[in-house]
Amino acid sequence: MASSEAHTWHARVKVAVWLRERLKNLTWGFLNMRRNSYLWIGAALCLGAVVVVAAGRQDKASRPSPPAKAECKLTGGKAVTVDYSSPRAKGRKIFGGIVPFDKVWRAGANEATSFVTDSDLTVGGTEVPAGKYTLFVIPEASKWSLIISKTTGEWGTAYSGPAADLARIDMKVTKLPAPEENFTIAFDQGEASCTMRMDWETTRASVNVAKK
Image (cartoon, rainbow, N blue to C red; front, side, top):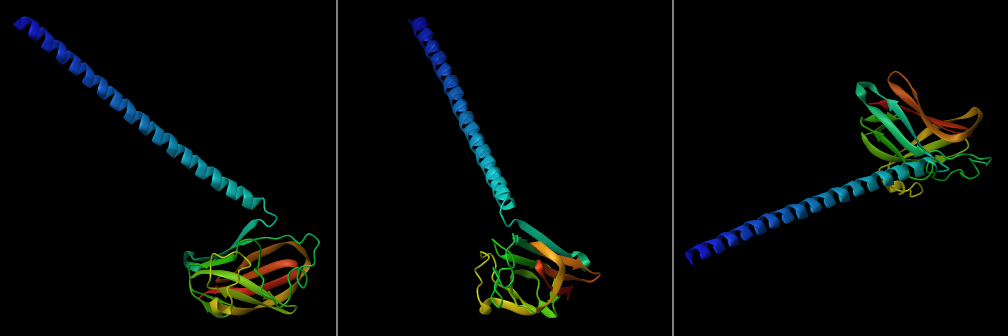
């Protein structure tokens, strides 16, 4: 009887050990499955983010008014950067036409034109502290007014009004020798300053930008 009970006890122990190992394997398998699922989900999310970013970049590049950038390099490793969109003339009358005189214009297309400086500046003799701004202009036949707005991040046509202006600065207007198809903002680099110019159709508006 004692031998039979011992045999039964050993059998139960074996079954318990088998069940424990089986449960352990099932638990590890479940955890690995969850971990792999999380990895696949994470990979899918990362891939989705990359696709969205790439699609956004491709979408911007294929716009009728694609994105463009201009940079003025200042002493001490400082710089001024303008990000804008570049509309095309396409045979249209620009200034005094689709861009009316004496009205605020976004100086580009799509998103607002940004003006970022990591150094205090003088723009046309007016002090501009380091920071991020939005550019607008008021074109006229003989001169332009450059508006440096403290409001940022808006869509291009959403001018916040004079209350948000940091400054309004006169720009010199000259005639280009040949028509310019693409609206262009560029900096002519000097030794200690730059001339920022806006060219389109047969008009150039320019202003000096210097480190303070």
